[in-house]
Amino acid sequence: MPARSAQILVAAVLMVGLLVMSALVATYQAHVLFLRARTVVARETVGAITADFNRALAAMLALATRTYFNHTRFAEFTSRFEEFGLEPGDLESAKRVARSYLEGWEAFVRAVYAEKGIQVEWVESVADVSHLLGRPAYVYDLMLLSWYSERAGSYACAVLKLNLTNAGLYGWKVVSLVGLTLFIDAFFSSNDTIRIRVLVDNGTYYGNLLARGWVEVYYQQGGQWVKANVKDMTYEGFGYYRITLESQLPSGAPYIVVASDERGILAVAQSVAPREQGR
Amino acid sequence: MALRRRRGVTRIAELVLATSMVVAVVLFVMFFTRPIRSAYLRETSDLRRLAYNVLDNLAEAGVFERVLGSALAGDVGWEGRLRFLVSSSMPPGVLFRMEVYSVSFDTGTGTVAFTRLDRGGVSNAELSVSFKEAESVYYTYVCTRDPDSMRGRVFYFVLVVGYAG
Image (cartoon, rainbow over the protein chains, first blue to last red):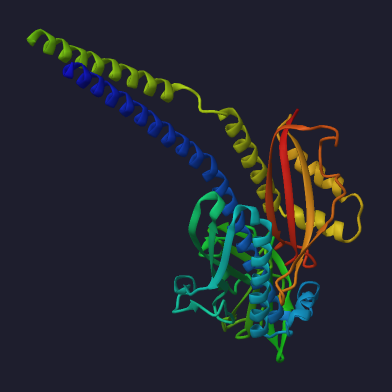
């Protein structure tokens, strides 16, 4: 009799073990399925929010560069932000407006994605842009406008932090650097041609200047900036553009190149037309 | 007595063998059978990806600035244009309904106001048509493209895509 009860005991233990193991496997599989199903949602939502944060940052950098360069000319855009405290041509007020705007954007995203349990926060950050400008330069205090030299750039940098509690995503953090870099690469006085290079954000070649952006050249004459007529412009690849002017630039005169990308971010580079004999 | 013991050992061995077989069969069945509602999950995730792709493509092309710029200017035909653009980006047989909101936020108080711009016309499905399998995505959009009058404006889209029921 004791031998039989031992057998029953062993059989019972085995059966219980089998049931527990089956339950564990089933739970594990359900969990994996659940994670797989919701990860996709989190990934796409995070992608959409991050892209929109980049757009918001770019819009504010465009506002700052446009008011700083010529508030009146871009009044359709800049004047709308005067009621929020934007002072024409003042970079500091543009930064204040940008901070308020990004706070508002944050509240907007929180309202839209509330059902996903979103926790969103943006913070200012420091970005090293020395490799873009060829000299020590850092973006801090939200924006950097480094203009009026042969290597110029406009940048804004911030960090986006994100939790989507209902989708099981915690601690997402991305550094967003938006900007436009403009080099005056060479001036060919023989045919009044300027070669420039345009990069966006963290050094991506910009190839849409002709189709979606624009470029202007001004030279100094009699203490005033005069707009030069552009005869032709060609893209040479890797962000290089060749601008041929209709008129000759005065020898030794300072000139500026103003470029805008499709997001409205401006950069202004400055150089001097070379002095040449026989001109 | 010795025979009884031997029988007991044999039964245990049989039990272990039987248990192993049952476990193997259960694992085999669990591994190869389709998870519950897998078709539903697969199809809606495809729809969700499609919806995000369509919205991303339209954003990249600067469509929203142009179409919604005319909407804010009072043009009544903007819904038809947006319907055409979204419709041409969708594969055949996929239905969609889109809601468009203009967003304004008070930077001082942090309050957000949504104003619906469309009148239900950004859709390729009649109101009576119900969607069999559908997915809705939310998309926030800050305008950055030309014209200058649109830069910095904020919109919110709800795009529902699905199959006819």
